[in-house]
Length: 305
Ligand SMILES: [Zn+2]
Image 1 (cartoon, protein in one colour):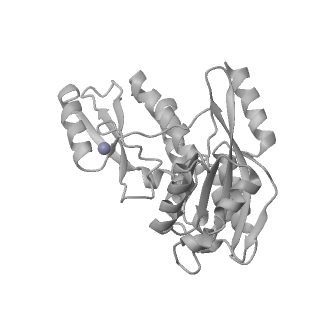
Image 2 (tube, protein in one colour):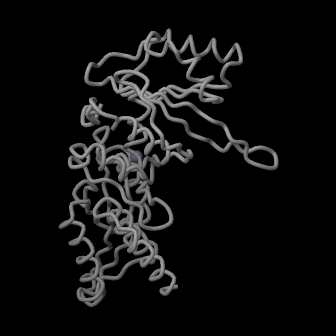
Image 3 (cartoon, helix red, strand yellow):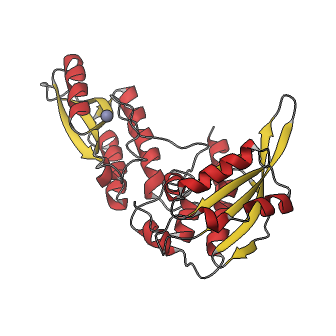
């Protein structure tokens, strides 16, 4: 596991506040009041708008927050023994367990029996694994940097600057090399094919730029493109290097120099890929925009159109 949930202290209601921010980011409407239900447990309620045929139907969940990671113990059924009473008191439709460890099977069986009896319509356990799988995805970086500062320092978070996230996909297997940059020994590369001309008066051309996983995927793509561009020489840059601020800036400077001063020409598609690459890398390399800047950026983009 990459995220250490012990970064959140267990002796106050911070785990509950984290749960509220997390669920808010997932799109739930949060009722701000946190109710202390035990030494290490807090409850609050959230509303989910479930799409119906003509309208949205509100579905109310009771969220039980238990921060057990300092003890590393799973949440036991006995710790949620009064769950039915809390469900009835809060008049909710469903139950969410928001736990920093896991939960024992007996708890799930108990919740399943409440569902079978009609006490709740549904339940969901959000355990450490589930929560972490969201925290490392784009769009959660503000929450991650606030509640897990040490984790955030160890990697550059992804900030979305345009309307949507821009992935860097391996052209062969389609894996997103930017999102998975710090996981699974990801080794994504950017490959440039440069067509060198024999005639000294003729400019070299960048004929193709592509993204690939280092190794098999890259070899497959090289075989494919070398058939088209047999006179080309390839150069590689690792994506983990290109997100380093100085290397990112240098990539942009080299691109401008090549076009403006060295007279290297680009195939239109290769140039588009270079521009896309800079925009996508910026999501990991630049600082996040503050609220006033977001609005200003939108206006600038509209003016450029
Ligand atoms: Zn691949």
